[in-house]
Image 1 (cartoon, rainbow, N blue to C red):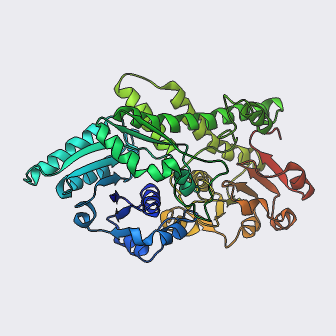
Image 2 (image 1 turned 90 degrees about the vertical axis):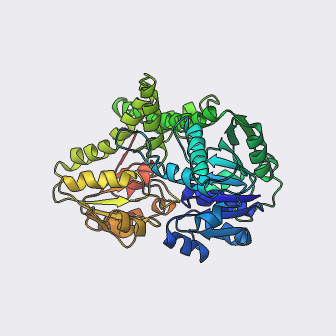
Image 3 (image 1 turned 90 degrees about the horizontal axis):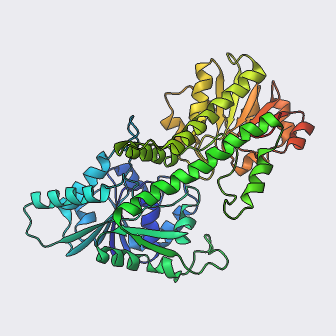
Length: 455
């Protein structure tokens, strides 16, 4: 099929490259010429493991452009994958979505077009997008030569494993009020559904994985599935963090508790890692939007509100721990291991590291950070924040009064603890992700504080 993707961020680019790899003719559209230049040079503007390699394999099927007409005119399926960041009131900013819909209406020419909301959008946005496309189409004074349908196809990608998540998905969800739109998208995804494609050697198919569940629903249900899924995962993280704080008080080990309850098949072990909580572009934005939607209908959504409150507290607790141990933060040197909101990505949106760093700087501390992938992006995006950057992980420990493990990059787990201890002014490490062994830290002469474990 001829496919257009509007937006070349984490979702749009991953979707486009995978669909190109599956054999579709894909044109990726973006307003940022520098991004398009990078992509035409074979380089991704974002960091995602194996994305460059898969893009090289699919290159003959991929076109990258800033030309809206070229991208949309003959497309049979158009994905809207633009940003929907939160406004101050919690509602998503739909400016980019509106612009995309109007552009589609102005440029579509194919006889039949399925317009797909891939961005996470408020419930009811499918109807709104359809009206925007129709108004824009009519404004061009066209005779009725193109018939279009709108569908919701939410993404469930985890940054750092997005390609595997799409190729070997738990499910593909398509919501549409027109059965024809569902049929078109099922055909588009058929190689994924049936797992009939030859797997890339660098993204192997999981053992025994034979097919992907295809779920069709109405538009509103598909939109709500996305919000509900992210809110539930956010709940799991916040729940175990609430339990972790109690575990510290009573002398229990929250990590053992999480393992114990995770063995219950009704609960499961994923997203039960105690620590400083979630960040990134999804959980915060989507829980805020869910609460805002509830308010429109007179619902308070107290469980989702509590999940957000607990998550915010985790970042503050990192500062409280330092103040308890060091007493005075003014003039102290604090190191941060990790800047991205999670490992295997360079995404800094709502990264706990920035929040923690700013709180420390506001209290007069000197903050030095390091990240193996996100450093260049941090220097650009956080240029107004007085964070200093270390050349490598070990240098973060130079004369440090404390070092905070913020992002669980694998290389941080393999550091020589003895070498780290020798460099520190005050041998204190606060592990915000639970990756360090207490006995090994003690043997190296370092005081370790781990979320969810009694000190």
